[in-house]
Length: 298
Image (cartoon, rainbow, N blue to C red):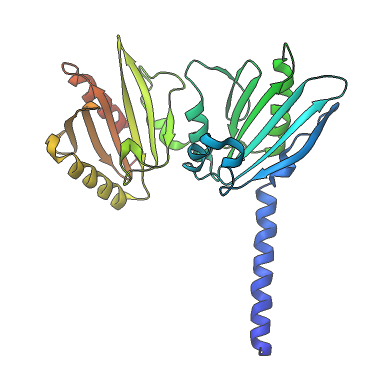
C-alpha cells in the first residue's frame, strides 16, 4: 500500500472513531441506563437481545416490536436485600421516538392509569410502562403479595434521569382536532397502515360523538411528491368504491365495506382522513376532515 493510501486510510479511521465517539456521547449505551438503587442489586445475568434473537425473550410478541424497527433490548432482574420482592427491568431501544411511541401506544389503553414519567407512562398492579426519547421501558414487580407502586416509580424515575432528554410528542398528533377525541386513544402504525403495504407512518385517533365512534387518521410522508403518490395508489386501490371529489376537488369521499364512509385529502406532505362514518352522519365526517385540513401545516 502506498504512503498516500495509508494516509487516506488513517484519515478515514480517524473520522470513523470521531463519529463513534460523538454517537456515544449523544446516545447512552443501554447498560448505562440500568438503575443503581440503594438496597437493590441485579440478580443473575444482564440479558441483551437484538432483532435477530428477540423472539427468544418475548416469543410471540416479538413480531409487534420488529414491526416498529426494534433495535436492541437490555433486561435485568433486581432483588431487594432481605426481601422476597424482585423487579424486572426491560429497556427497549426502538431507534426513534415515533417508534417508541408506536409500540407503547399499541400496548396502552385509553382508560389506563396514566402517570407523569418520561413523556407518558401508565401503571397497573405490579406493572409500570413508559416511553421517552427512543426508548420504551417496562417494569414488573414479582414475589410480593402487595407490590408497592412507589417501588416501580422509584425505578422509573431513576431510568428517566439516566436517559435525560425525554423528547416531544410526534408533530402529527398535534393536528388531530380536540373536540370529541377519546383521550389517550392515539396510535402510531409504522408499516401496512390501513392494511396497505404502500401506506406507512400513519397516526390514528378515536372520536366519540353521541353514542357512536369513528376515527381520524394522518399519514406523514417525506414530501409533497410522496404524499401524492400514496394518495393516488390508495384511490386506485379503492376505484371500485368510486371515490367522489369533494371540497372543490381537494378531497375525496368513498364508501368502504370495512370503514363505511371515508373522507381523505392531501395537504402538503400529509394525507388526512376520517373513517367509520355511518350513513346519515356524513356531515360529521366532512366537518372533521375540514378541521384536519385547518390544523395541518402546509
